[in-house]
Image (cartoon, rainbow, N blue to C red; front, side, top):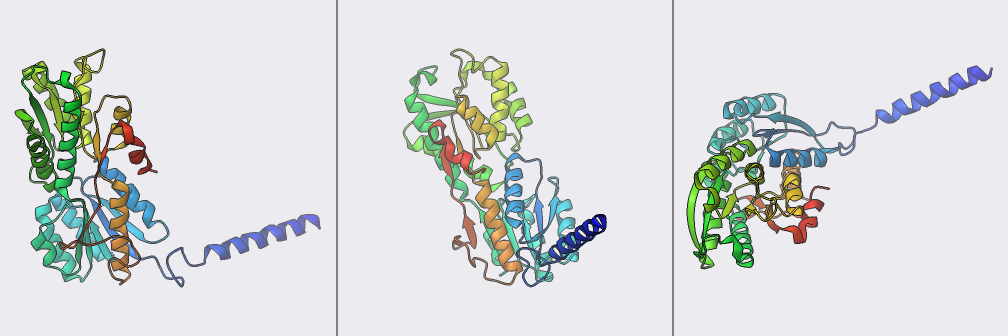
Length: 345
């Protein structure tokens, strides 16, 4: 009898748990399915974009069903993925373009299906966004990162007179540029150097080549530059942290950061691996490209339009006159490194 009662009790508990599991999903409302949002990332193995993707997934939990795609840095792949997501009935698209010039093609697909679209991180042209009233952008003000990085270079250069190895008062620099034509790469390159010049410090460009945002390419370029210029290089400027870290690996191989042998390097993004090097006093600093808030804003806007709400409904985001939410940058050095660490919690 006791065994029978026990079995009945277990059976009752199983039925009760099954009933709980059949209730409406969090955020779904009245038992309806969660809104389906199609997301593409230009490539999953990009260091910075991996954190944006994680933020999107985190903020979608219990609120939206994501169809998430790795475009593998191939625009043709991304175009096909958009077609696939539309065929699966997504209510909104969130697109990190492979090529910003391809925005009109993506917009045409979304417009034909009457599906709203939120671009993020790689900004389409103003004309492309204006061509569709259900398209928006989440990202940054591209030149801001360059200006902040330039100020960081000026401040650290002025505070360390021994970095001027030849005593000519100029910074002999090499620059690792991101993807050619990418708005962030172009703006960071231009405004970082302009900010140095505007401060009154002279500059001499020894090398400027593209490392395509990649740490391996950053190391390869730095290897070649060290072989060619050696100690004539006084500063390494990188459009992102991945390339900066690649350069640092090259410099370490040549004995830098051991004893008194030092080479200042700055990056952009303030990714966790870069923060480790800042803490160790190797990387001079970086510029926080707020992956957590870029991901959150992208999901917030996409979710609102997927549910037929105003794009900013219930958020603290603001649109500028270019239909864009701009997430601010912040200079990160050893002194305020905790701010960057907190952004990854």
